[in-house]
Length: 187
Image 1 (cartoon, rainbow, N blue to C red):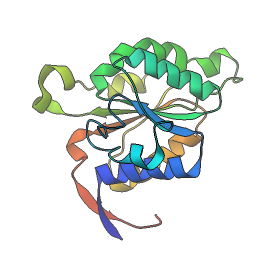
Image 2 (image 1 turned 120 degrees about the vertical axis):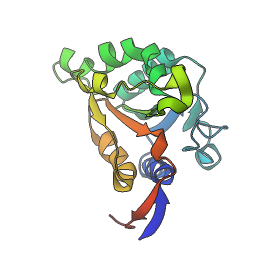
Image 3 (image 1 turned 180 degrees about the vertical axis):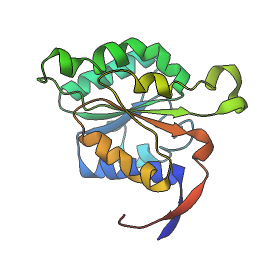
Image 4 (image 1 turned 90 degrees about the vertical axis):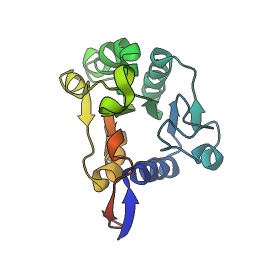
């Protein structure tokens, strides 16, 4: 058993995925050199390089679309959308492409895409980052939505999400990042 924070658990899950499969990569705004808006990916660019930790321009629709294309091409992208409200800029890509391609192709096209989104900032971040769209995404056919509520969830949900041939959204509640709990080494 060791004491870990949600942030550390999320990061450990990403590191494990990158180590386990060369098709896995992480991309999004500030995930590389800056280390992510909430420091989940801090140091990963030094460990895995710019081919696997990809800083993107401010273009959610563009990089979510690139993630969809990469997933269709056999890669296993983890796309970080900095905050849930920014996902509206990629809404068409998420609900009309990622969520529908498997059905529209009669199961011939898989979209093993994981989209991570920070949410739950509440009143601390005012009008621009306080939205809660989790329920909306949970009602979109073709999407799977995960919301880690325990340290074990934060540590192990990503592996399951990457194994799914469908797009999965993982919501990370920002008020949990610094909370810690004991986690068994091989849980």
